[in-house]
Every structure is written in C-alpha cells, then in structure tokens.
Image 1 (cartoon, one colour):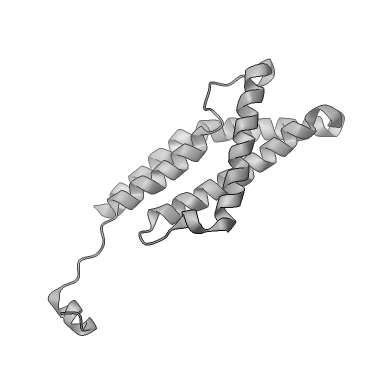
Image 2 (cartoon, rainbow, N blue to C red):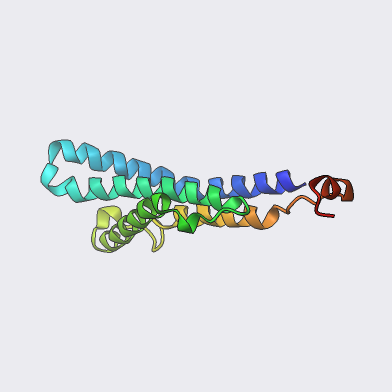
Length: 144
C-alpha cells in the first residue's frame, strides 16, 4: 500500500508539472534559437532559462532527499545554491512575463514545477512510515 501511494503521488506530480515543463522547454529552445540570430536580445532570456533548468534539477534532487526520512537536505549547500539560483531565475522570468506579451503566462507558471516537485517529495515523506521492529529484532540489536 505504501509503495502504491508513493507511486501515485509521484505520478500525479509528474502529470501536474508536465505542461509547464514542456512549455519552458519550448521557450528555452526558442531563446537559444534567437540567441543564434539576435544575440543582444536573447542573452538574458537564455541565461535565465538555463539557470531555471539548473534550479529545477536541484528541486527534483531536493524533493528526492525530502522523501527519505532522516535526511536534512536544507543543510546541504550543494543543493541549496543551485535551487536558490533557480528561484532567482524564476523571479526574473515571472517579472519579465508581466512585461513581455510573447512570454505572457499566468502568475506562478515558472515556479509551479518547483513547488510540485518539492510538494511530492514532502507528501511521499509523510506517507512513508518507519518500519516497526519486532521484539526479536530489538533483542538481536541489544536494545530490548
């Protein structure tokens, strides 16, 4: 039952994040295509999308760490720095989305995949119960 609930939570998170991630992949491709023809206008967008992807990968790693009990990913600087950089890129993309009609998306569009991934990791963590040891296992460890 526990594995089914975890798999369902991860599956729902993937489906919810699929649309924004697909559109951001298309926009990333567009930014790099524009960088080849008009580099002056697309440097900021290309950089922002690359940093967004780095932050998204960090959010997935953070979600994976959150899903395991006993792990404290908020103390690991190697995960938090790319995640923070990704959040800065999210903020920049959100603000630019308000002012550029070509990139007009609903508020929170760029942060949704981050929140969904970390939320799924948190839900899986809550669903996972620690294994219960029997008296024989405790006696074998010497803690009975």
